[in-house]
Each structure stands twice: as C-alpha cells, then as structure tokens.
Amino acid sequence: MSEPQPVVSMRRIGKKFGGVTALHDVDLDASAGQVLAIVGDNGAGKSTLIKILTGVYQPTSGSIHLDGKPLEMNSHSDAKALGIDAVYQTLALADDLDPAANMFLGSELTRSFMGIPYLDNKTMRLEAVRVLDERLGVKLRSMDVATESLSGGQRQAVAIARAVYQPDLRVLVMDEPTAALGPQETARTLKLIKVLRDEGLTILLISHSLDDVFEVSDQIQIMRRGRRAGLVKTEDSSPKEVLGMIVGAAEDAA
Image (cartoon, rainbow, N blue to C red):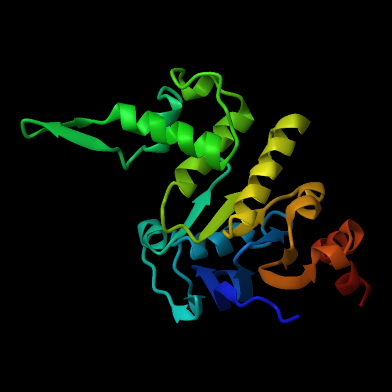
C-alpha cells in the first residue's frame, strides 16, 4: 500500500536569529487524516519550525509546499488564508468574553438595520453551539458565562472550535494541547484530536507527553538541536526508542 501524498511539505528549512542557527535543513511531511507528532527537548527547534509553518516566522532558507505548490507567507494571516492555523498553549482567549464571542473574536458576524451594522450575537451563539456540540461533541453547561469560568479542557475546546470554524482549514497545529490538564480533560482533548483527524484534517501535534503522542499520532518526528533526529511510524516504535532519539543516546554512544 502506497503512502498518502503529503498535504504540506517543508524542505531543508533553516532559520537563523542573528548569529544563532535555530534550524538546520529540516524536512517535514504531513498528510490528510493523520496526526504527525513533533517531539524534542526545549530548544530542539519545535516551536521555531511550527511558527515558520504558520507564517509567524519566515525561514532563512528552504521551501514550503501545500498540495505540491510552493507557498510564500509573510504573516500568520497569510497562513490562515491558505488553510493553515494553530492552537497555541496560551489559547489566546479573552477571559471576560463568553465562549461564542471568543470563537468569533476578530471575525465577528454582523447584521444591519437601516444601514447601521450591529453584532449578530444570536447567530454567533447558534454557530458556536453547533460547532462545539455537533462537530466536536462538547457540551458546555452554559453559553452565558465568562470563558475564564470554564475548565481547562472546555477552554481548549473553544480555542479548537475557533480554528476549525474556518471553512478552508487544511492543517491544524496544536501546541501542547494537554499541558496543565487533569487526566479526564486530557482524555477529552485527545478524543477531540482523533475526531479532527478522522474528519480528514492534517494535524501537527507538539507535545512533551509521550503517552499522549503514542495514543493519537500516526507518525513521530523527533527534533534535536535544531535538526530532524528521526522520523518513525508510531505503531512500529516505542516510547523508549523515541526518548533515546530525543536525548541523543545513539549519537552519544557513537
């Protein structure tokens, strides 16, 4: 059986910050309906790589392709317009706003009366409930509460709903989605990732939890010192093998 063609490809990506080289000729391939986990110690280059993919940084060298076509992105807005978005660990939610307002933050729906525009709060609320409930399987106890009163897993679901509401979303980066969550909420968040994968999205998962990585990923890319240290199929590997590549056990032994 042939391997699926990648939706997004990164080739020989390099990134320098002044005299410091953060990435050295890194390749990446991610396919539709699959979860590619990216793991590595702090400073391994994970965040720099995904910020290049999402348009936050521009690479010093290398190229990015979407469906085989070269991409040029100068901002995160460019990436979103191409169907590439991210849910970062900070979530970027406004705590004092309700879930629907957060889901549409920056892209509010409006109507007009006698030529005067106003927020269409009713439609935004209905759409928020639809995406959370029907697409993600998440029911909030109330849509009339401030987002800061929600649990960590519920806040994560609101941030995910905001990303997947985009009709042209193709690639979703998830940066440490289970950080600071308890066991039950971690399980719910991992279930959300599986739902999105099964819908055909391309998921890039950055995580320090190898337990989470081995539960939901199809492939694992290991980063070490700004390079790709390895790429394995999850089902053919083990946490011990991946941890060895993260810490450079084979390299140190050599």
